Image 1 (tube, helix red, strand yellow):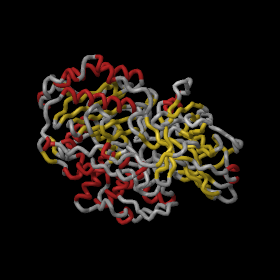
Image 2: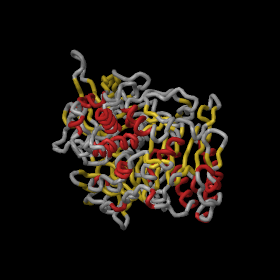
Image 3: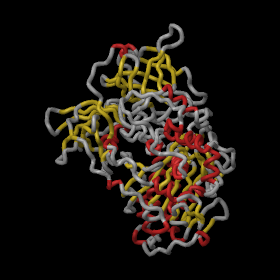
Image 4: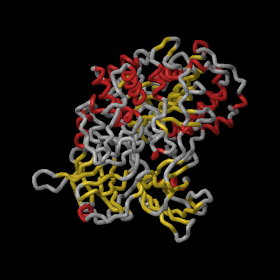
Length: 634
């Protein structure tokens, strides 16, 4: 997974300057939870072994929280079966003056996915779900179409590892009280984004299907099943799956840009419908690290826990260094020197979350924040805490107590593919880019087409293209491109651009074929208006436009982000086209369908219908662009 090239959150440096590091290896050993220092209320726990780290980090957390307008942050750190640190910072409800604590409840978005995965795997261990059987065997109402010749059928295992090729999201109805099981039948009007097992493509739709599979198999509503089989046994009293947050005194108020947001209902509960506290997540982390044991009781079966952390995609060539388990992302060496890393994040309307385990060190951390802008804050805070905690608690761990560490991502086969010429247009997560030779073998130009920014590339001795150090200041949205090195490859039947920020190569984008623009698509360029929008969640400023001669589809979802999303489209015929690229929200189909009576055709995308409201001119371009899609990534 390509790591963000933005400025790194400075907590690690600040902690180092405060005198906390490996020199503290002789710090007092971790004490049992009963001996930890507790605040009178709010669930705060600070173990003596972690006090110096906590005291060094706390003022920096407060500083970053205030500077980035994150009203509340709560965190928990566990080691083995002990809670070392649990605390809240800031205000859960600034207007009411209610302080955040370890017991504050947050919407945690995609942290629902590991729970959905665990429920699925438990049913599989009981013989009630076959992970490798066609999904339609258990969900016959699923009738999604495909434009691919592949004979492979979608299986639960593919859904669990985000390799089923289903669309990332069904945007229409996502922020509504529509029952999530409706997605299974609504997919009859959608097309698969990719052939199964072609590439990692993060999918909320996939986990929504898994939720339907769980409740169909268990003959019990999904939320009730998770409460009975997971939350109650784990003692997670504040945790639930729900379309809207509970009206409780412990609930944090979500924010964006420092302003409070009214909560919207969420349809895809198995993918994004979790609300929880770090106190509860600490219990979950302990159970995972201890093979299903919680304070001396076996509350979860160890088999599904171990299965979750086994890599699933070593044979998928396009994934390069991306490693996925079943409900988790797997990394190696990305958090200090602690070896394998098991993690999942969550970003939803007004909230951000991160959950990370270091199986070999027996450490786990959860960070929750009441701002949808806090994704980088929770990630870097979680990594900083774990990096320093690993140095502060060095005593040996009983190996029989912990779930086996997952095989490292470095055990994957070396990145494959054949290096090819880099000239051409590429659809990437950072927008449409173009690479062109300058007439010299070692010099190229990279154009961030949607920003109008150009950078000189030079070829290094290793064969990779890098941005010339003499390149002048770039627009903020294009700076991420300047920090990478590039190589074009043919992997299987796909021509792609691979990028590396220093953390390993990943496919950045797919090459667009050089082909003429059909006259029918040229005639349909212009602005469109959604006619079936959901209440409280507008989708605005839809456009089909030309950028550097390529058709692009753009829109805004102002409740989620002020940024404008724009993605290249490849026409397939006069009435359909596909959003080009590999991964999240790529592979979606745009279609022109008949309107009512003699009306002009309507544009159909992800369940939305839109009518054309002006022609915008043959080269209409958006007023603004976005380097990220603004949708709930995790």
